[in-house]
Image (cartoon, rainbow, N blue to C red; front, top):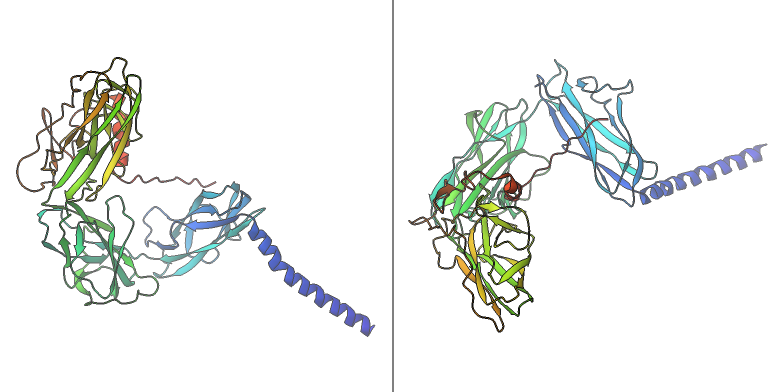
Length: 521
């Protein structure tokens, strides 16, 4: 009997070892199927106290790395760590785990849902817990994640800076920066993120700031300085940098932005660099009228020369010929004016001896009555307006558009035009060099005669006189009157037939933010 027990015990040990060895294999096999990640919109949540009315959302979405569709995915939120001091906007079972129904999740991004949390009255400020989101899939793996929940908020705001105009290249702007905590919890350290457009440069580099070039946002902000301070930002108090942040106005400055925001310090501070230290000093009670992110508009006293490029083609009647026209910037300033949808554009007048049959993607039929493009790429129109994308032009940038033109039967050599203008046919007043605003577009017909030049756009306005750029309102001149890039757009009513084109242009002038509404099942 003793030997049998020993043999049984040995067999059991072998079986246990086999199970232990098998379990990782099983997990690996699950990982070979689709892998779904739960992505939180914010993994650090503060609950206002007293509650503000709207609950704070544990807001999540999904991303399926693949391969293939994850079947019967179920997501659950474990609230057991916070349920004693929060209320929810959904009925939570006795086990404190809220579960959303099963769904198949295809590869890529997928919608999720949310659950709202509010702090119970009387909960001490600073009370902290976690909400864990996890899931299952019939054929894959769901990677869990955790949100940290704290009663109270750290709300950091920065000062609003007034718009500036008239700063000349070579000058330096001294920019005061203030950080206020209008929340109920202190921030144990703070980071000041500053960003500028390419026409501005930081006059001085500080050892506690990291400088980098980032992807441009809708305002064209790319040059970043991320400064770290170990100062405790107390609730209800304000702090300022101990010296104005210097911004050099460069030779290419024209329409510029300076943006700044304050973020609670998380993680280790970056490695110090070279230079003096930028410090924060106490500045009294928290300022009112601040904002989470401020963007200051700075219009420099400078110009940019927008140049039209023409083309010449040759053929015989019936031939399809191609011409490539262009719009470029010869400086000295770069052009990135995103306070209006009246952006730089190229107005193309088709030579009369031809018919436009191939229209580039960014070009549409020009409506003289509406003073804008129609949004339609209809062949055979006499004029087309081409709206470049991107609509920002650094010095030396050129955007090209290729048209296919069919030479008419019996057609003769004729000349059209490419004109540097705006989306609404206005003159860019920051451009003071107008000899290159137009360029000929000529189609020579072998064996044909010379036709009368094609009619050009009636919007060949005269540029505003005077030196420098005055883009605080960015006035533009148009035939029969004047408008404003910042406010008026076309300067007149837009018929319904062309409203779509104008709306599409407006969307293209800035960043389109697409907000999904996630419905809780």
